[in-house]
Length: 162
Image 1 (cartoon, helix red, strand yellow):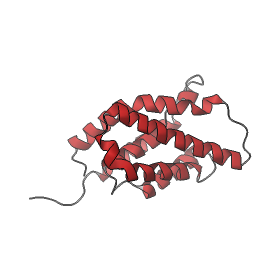
Image 2 (cartoon, helix red, strand yellow):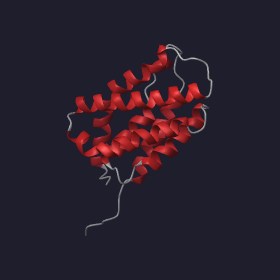
Image 3 (tube, helix red, strand yellow):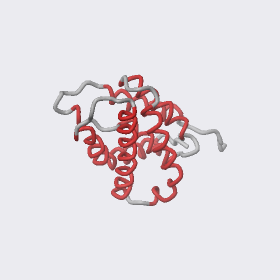
């Protein structure tokens, strides 16, 4: 019997929840500026893998949750995440065909866009000036993308998430 219902909502939700936990998990002060954009990476992956199920709305909600968890201005991450998810969904058929290292370069561009959006949001709110460390998560997230992509793809296939 072929069940046409989508499977794996729990896995998608669990990976997003885990990413949000990793976002607020305490790190030593030396490593804090290097913290990857876990939630954004998970949103990019699911937007690539299942663009119909994880789209701009989910990205917006995850961004709002991240704003609340990090006590940033409400909507700043939501706007940035929704923009990145929108671009990912628009280009998903191309990005999926790239080798993982080229996907990492695409993720780099998306993360620069996200951080740039956050930078502009902070500027509009007259927040204190940011130093160069503000951009470090882009580097670490880009480096983490290949193993994270492979892990999430393995989980998606193992649990037949469609």
